[in-house]
Length: 292
Image 1 (spheres, rainbow, N blue to C red):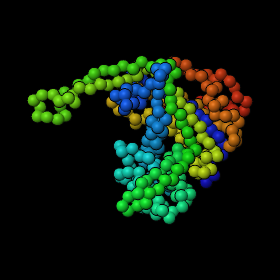
Image 2: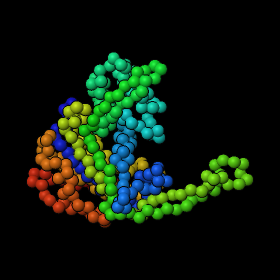
Image 3: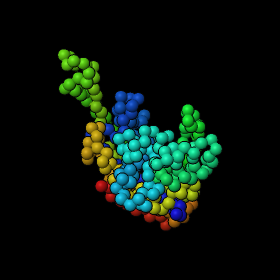
Image 4: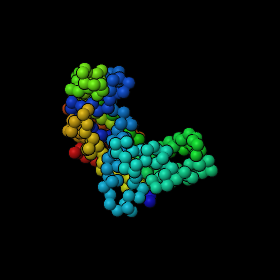
């Protein structure tokens, strides 16, 4: 299959209403903010949501031929579809991975990287470091793969207001029930309202190394407007987070007509979620996709 034929840039405009878009475990799980008070969603958080949507897509495919090369390597525990207990087990599995020989001391790293990219969509898209230490029955190995798709952290257009509420449980998690335990008290945090924006790019030169194709780009393009589907939780109630718009710039060549920085800077997003293009780039017209 031919690899990505054109450079692609994109932006995602998201709305948050009474939700915690990405809690910081080092700060009591409060919504992430920078020193200017802007809300933040880490790039790994966004890629996790992309992977979750790709897993859902993979499980919906009925034809085994369609599933070939569409599996996801980095599966969260609550989205696991193959029963593997770790990334190493998945990589070395004879059924769901490449087998232990692919990661042995005698294996050629380039061949293993090529096989991994062919098998897992997220590996050829985002890259992966197969860094496994030595164990009793396996060699240590480190195989880095640079992916063709990059996504930046998302930041809010304006500083966000974070509300914190103390909560209590009506029953203790431990003890004999004669008194409440220390775990009955807790805190819950949320962003009252905010518009977040993230940017990304798809690089044809890196795609040549991983095998990332135009079809792969089309799959990711189709799921970006649905980034928060089936993602509801207590911290993110259904409907509290949504993709408002996806802006998609498709260049006319692998090298691209303009740098990603110049393309991204043409987009201006306001606090109400409306947006405009401050500069018209000759020969590069953005496609505007409504969210769901």
